[in-house]
Length: 245
Ligand code: FPP
Image (cartoon, rainbow, N blue to C red; front, side):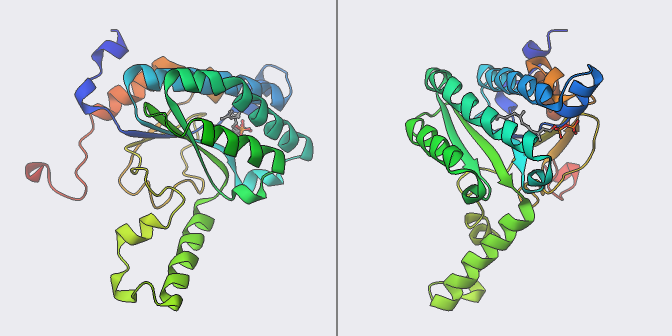
């Protein structure tokens, strides 16, 4: 069966969020350093982004570095940051060619200045692209995001620009880092782990979850197509009964 041809193009998930897990274990399995896994992880990012564009997914969000990842060995953190800078520089022409608009979410001010600079330059350079919005979650933790949103809202209430009774789910969502991006329809995690790990807790409320036992560097566009195909056979009821849909 050609999995790509079996996908119903009229029912594509609009937003796919991914936890790219297993780089370290994949490298260890080959007797290599963890950084070797991250380097090959970048190739998987390219592969999946191309697959998403090929099939027409408008939003892709990747968990590239969590707030907890700062606790990893210094050398690994440094290597990840360098990989990020070099990848952004290298991929910019491809982003432009493929209409990719880059965004970043997380506590971006915690990132090294060099990365902040490369990120904002790439975001600025790609801001008019419309085919696919690629959001990188960097120094990202969902609980901090929710606290930051709460602080924003509390400030508006204290200043008198927002009334307590006017706080709704929509208002709350507008104060999250992801404002302007629809909630994910599908969330993929690789490496056999089945956890959310502080990723998009608010936004994943009604998202379909799909897990792969493949390590992230082994994940390719056909795996993405398989996930989309499986997603299409699920019934999303949003709390309603089948008959009400
Ligand atoms: C998880 O594997 C992966 C990460 C913490 C980093 C993901 C980063 C990349 C794929 C490269 C940079 C990204 C971009 C967008 C250019 P792990 O190290 O937790 O693996 P393990 O669970 O086997 O230890």
